[in-house]
Image 1 (cartoon, rainbow, N blue to C red):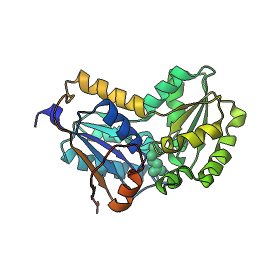
Image 2: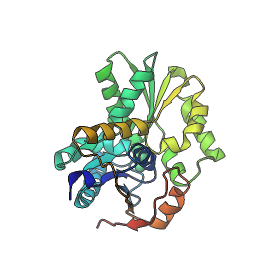
Image 3: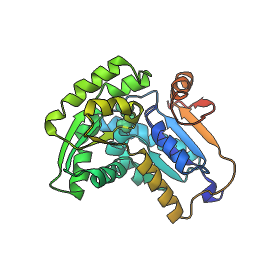
Length: 267
Ligand code: DGL
């Protein structure tokens, strides 16, 4: 198949990566996309680096078998823990979500006091702090793990009062840091962005890397002559467990029509 006609592969542990999928779909409307939600293993954020790397490699191999031309790791946890391994093992370009988010945050922050919220594994990895300090060694970075957010999003409790309460509990911990910019360091979090914004306070700018990731994908495809410009678009969605549950939840997200959700179990 002509390389430009091949699909883009996008994966996450569950629903969160659909925030990136949606941005890619809007910015690159002619691309065929394959989304993989690893619902058998969600949440990734409480797993070890070895486990997340093994899951990510398995998904990447499956997607590579579907002849993808680009892999977007639409998961901060997998981007923080497994990106190098994925790049080493694949013969196609791989884009993660950390760097685009960091670049955007550095473009926006005036005080250089930056908060990062994410899963336990992402925050513990220190990957965000390292990347921010590479750009600006004197930046102050305040990381906070928010492990209850992913299950609340997967549960569909996006506007629920419990989610509001949890958000204010978490975000109050960042108040003393006086941040002006907050990176949503998990692709599930944009789903509850309004709630997080309210809890963070009006003076804090929220960074959702989905748009920046989509722009990076577009630049990369154009630069390599891999962009698909015309033709009917095919979207395929796979999950590793319970497709019906995933389809039900995803239907309420602004990801566009997904069609049927197929099951792909790994033994
Ligand atoms: N949405 C993912 C992330 O960006 C994974 C969350 C999880 O499964 O814990 O980190």
